[in-house]
Amino acid sequence: MPADARRLPVAVVQQRLSPDPQANRERSATLIRAAARDGARLVLLPELHLGPYFPRREDPDAFDLAEPVPGPSTAFFGRLARELDIVLVVSLFERRLDGLYHNTAVVLERDGDIAGRYRKMHIPDDPGYFEKYYFTPGDLGFTPVATSVGRLGVLVCWDQWFPEAARLMALAGAELLLYPTAIGFDPADDPAEQARQLDAWQTVQRGHAVANHLPVLTANRVGREPPGEAAAEAIDFWGGSFICGPQGEWLARATEAEGQVLHAELDLTRTARLRRIWPFLRDRRIDAYGELLRLARDDDTP
Amino acid sequence: MPADARRLPVAVVQQRLSPDPQANRERSATLIRAAARDGARLVLLPELHLGPYFPRREDPDAFDLAEPVPGPSTAFFGRLARELDIVLVVSLFERRLDGLYHNTAVVLERDGDIAGRYRKMHIPDDPGYFEKYYFTPGDLGFTPVATSVGRLGVLVCWDQWFPEAARLMALAGAELLLYPTAIGFDPADDPAEQARQLDAWQTVQRGHAVANHLPVLTANRVGREPPGEAAAEAIDFWGGSFICGPQGEWLARATEAEGQVLHAELDLTRTARLRRIWPFLRDRRIDAYGELLRLARDDDTP
Image (cartoon, rainbow over all chains, first blue to last red):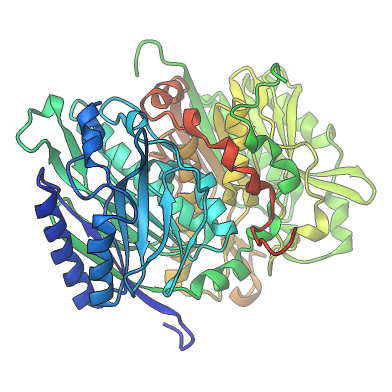
């Protein structure tokens, strides 16, 4: 790295999640401690890492899993962040009011305080991922969280398919993009289709890195849920967590193993250097982008 | 392919370009005839394929290379399109008025008529690519060209780094994205940097395929320009032309060889099927995208 590098060692935790929230939390803490011991100063966990992926069905009782922010989980992970002197990005089912819930990522500062939160803006809903039942789309917009290690463009899972979200974070000065995720294969799909989906998922996020010259960190859960279920009724979360640099280049990639920690050392000055060589932001045609604010450009409707 | 597939055999021409426009045109015609003979019904040529990449320097005499649209080149390629019964996408230096020029892609229909044109909207300017001297940014917006083989989202080179352009084409009903291109290595960069750049270029375009569920065709020129020049003064156009499907999956990739024709058979019904599985367009947060119409989200300026 050049002498004037702004070095940031980061880590991504890929985790298999059990039905026992207490066990998951302790396992997360073990992996986070390992990440910090190996030098990470910023650690990202997967989406909704306190338990199984409950939106695979619509169940009124599942709202019992939600908790306020701040709440017991932010207290637990805040203590851990302070103890380890790291910035920690966690993902929670936020209860805001009875009847009003969000899928929320919380950034915990090195002093244990909450540095900021992001409420998932794009909510999926397709067979096995019934999120629109549980999560009200976020109302906080796409705003980076300022921390002691940089301005974090925290987004969540389904957001990763939307270049708009990454761009808005970049335009607001984000220095890296982070995606806690829960995505898996439909076991009914053949292996070729499964491979295309995993590659599409990594490619579109690496594309956000390239288009914005920002590193991307993505943490996914891994393994079959529910564990003993027949394939036809289960989701096989595909792991595949990764860290890429601001040219979309691979820095670290997970296999499908359980309980992995990925490490990379970022140099946050590379973004500025790359933007001098390929100055995309200079040339955006904001005069011609107006119809991005429409759902479709079907000219027969006013 | 399924029984209800909408099959479209397409081809991409990757070409080395000499200082002789007449020779380039004849060589293009030879390659286009080969593509049509092998079944292609839609053929894409590289950016500014009538000659060397003149914007590598600022030269007032280079405006002599421009021509009107319609003009001699659209007549030549229109006759070829009609003879071969194909749709042809060509790229020209358009003289609109003295002092007003564009970098323009023209779509020629199977009957030889001009189906539509696209004037490059994002204009680069960096060492060796002095395009802002030559090309006024396009004033036609991002509008697909309707043809007998589908609605073509034609964009040009530097546009490929802008997810906004691809998205606007998709929102207007484009069925595929096409990028005539002229991009190469700075010979001063080391091989690792060159590899990252080529991969970034392919990745961001494959990302547009994924985010919009559209196939992408990209035609680049190849080889050193000027041919005999010392490396430090030259551009090594990197070839790497490709065709990918609507999940960003590779369908055809060029090496750095000269005069290659890439073929793929698209099924245009796949876009609709993919959008049922991963319905991104359903969930765009147009209520929260307003700041995409700003250059930066620096809140201290009103």
